[in-house]
Image 1: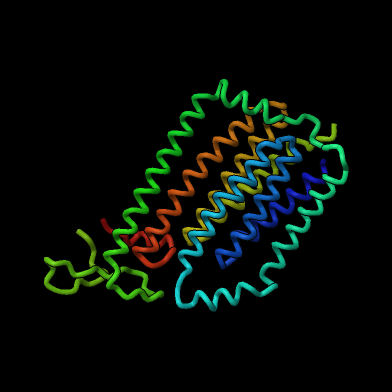
Image 2 (image 1 turned 135 degrees about the vertical axis):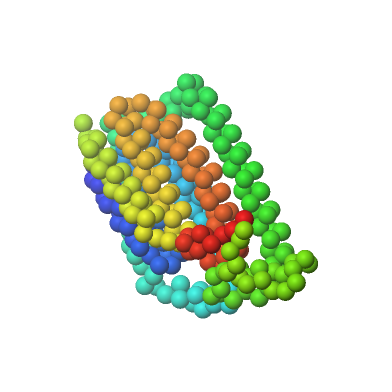
Length: 199
Length: 102
């Protein structure tokens, strides 16, 4: 299992460095998902199979899908089709595919070996869940409160975003504009300069 | 014993954390800054897993589950804020957010 740890650790580090140096957010997300999959293999080789499954399902599955949705939502525009054409070039997904192939070879090697070659001291999911709902019960309750707070906060921010976009409906939205022009309200006599410093 | 030495796991966690920190400091795009924060949280979780594997205790994995919960809540709020920032200043540049008023 040593070799699995070192290879997937190297893949994780390389994919992470490539992720933060990409200029395009979608390419960065591809590399980051790959980095998280490699981290899952690292966890597996360290004898934590339950956490490895959680890493794939929650991190690479749920959180990264959230990122992808937001990036796709922000990229909508007249140039989206042209960007889409650029993204289909094979040179751009060759890197992630190569690193993912390394992980796939590792996984197949683990499966072909037959006996499950876990680390010397593997911590089973049973022990984890017994600890989670025994001495850490208060932590589970606090985590649920945190998630509730996150849910309410995300709903609040999303609701305000919808009303503000309704207010902006009449405004043309050029992509280069970096400061939102202030809409003349019913009480304002004329247009307000956009760079007016607020009181 | 065919296990990985603890130091190597911690070195990997430290390197990943350093990469994430560099990402937060260098990139000015809000989405990239959130990504880098995710990388740092993941590296901290890896340190917990390595320590848990070293002593064969489930506590490291329990702490990783808590980190995962916190990361999920943080990323949902962070992305909602990024959407709000984009709607208000039409860019994802974090430096532009200093022009916000009210």
